[in-house]
Image 1 (cartoon, rainbow, N blue to C red):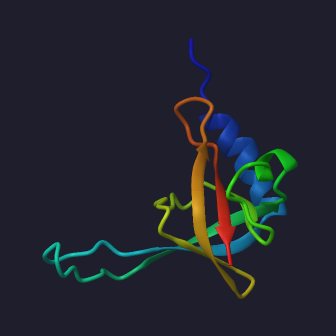
Image 2 (cartoon, rainbow, N blue to C red; image 1 turned 45 degrees about the vertical axis):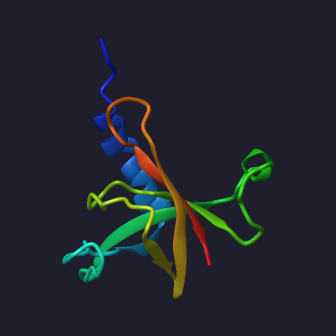
Length: 119
């Protein structure tokens, strides 16, 4: 028997992020069209998301590519943002480049996204 994480996400994770998080905008690049040698970039798509900022632990920093001013966010799955490493996160007037994006997915359900950003 498999535990259904949907209820945990919808009844616990999402309300906590909504209560303690900040509004942000995740911008994903548009899909390129045209020939491979001369693609035309598509219009970017913006998603309204909620994020909670957290600090990198010493274990996160040790032996990795995390730089001093990098920032880490836990991002809600609400609004079903398309997740791509080529995005940007805008929060409080700062636009940050998405460096790494990984789901927290203990089962088949994505509970939230861990987003590593850089200015």
